Amino acid sequence: MKVLALESSCDETAVAIIEGGHLLSSVVSSQIDVHRKFGGVVPEIAARKHLEIVDKIVSASLDEANLSLEEIDVFASTMGPGLVGSLLVGLSFAKGMALAMNKKFIGVNHLFGHVYANFLEYPQLRPPFMVLLVSGGHTEILVLEDWNRIELVGRTRDDAAGEALDKIARLLGLGYPGGPAIQEAAQKGEVKYHFPRPLQEKGNFDFSFSGIKTSVLYFLKKNPSASAYDVAASAQEAIVDSLVTKTFGAAESKGLKEVAFAGGVASNSRLRERANDLSEESKIRAFFPPVNLCTDNAAMIAMVAYEKAKRGLFSPLSTNAVPYLSLDVF
Image (cartoon, one colour):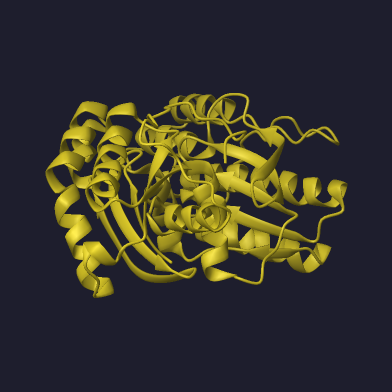
């Protein structure tokens, strides 16, 4: 079974093709340079850029896989969550190809996609296992109980970790996107300052990151000559410490011996280092997808679609974009 999937939930236009669970091609076009001057993604511009390039990305993916459109068995696309205009571009294009080729269509939950990125790298991984889904829009501790069922264990009560990194990078004048900028700056600095790690009481697996942004803001006002590199390293350490400590604590509380990481922030080198250290201490295995599968991509969407197709879980062509799609929907 050959599955072609599109991902256009935010500012990456991506297409991937999977055959029998094996990745044949993956093409991603990023809009970072377009949105950098605004300091964040502008939804209307993002949708327009998807529309301008989606056909070229589909063609490039087919060429990379050495396939024709007629050879695709199932077409898929992210249906949410995400920016509604961006979602509609990929969704409409995928449904159009399915209709034109008289093939099946599948709508995919973007959040399940990030979790399923781990299966591309670790096909031996099997539910149930703990997941830290951490990105610019999401920070959640989850249990993948079965292929199509997720239990929410903890979540951020305010900012997502990636959002906090973006805001701190802006305060430090490090540019956009904030996650990679903070990581690069932190590698040149030292952890000299202590920033808050809220909600540390035992058994609390929720996060809060808005306070660290405020703490950095007031610290910089009082210490204008402080090294941006040292502040970046200290702020990153506070966020990473909260993420890994709570995630491994949640795994222990559930009696789970495997933790998978997902989402753009999972590419952070310090997060990976701390998680591997805790993995050795706790004997709980840590799984990280390759960096290119942590950020938004269509390979993870194709992987979910493949599993849904095997189970006959196809979607009607009336499927619409759902900007706030929940984890209850596979």
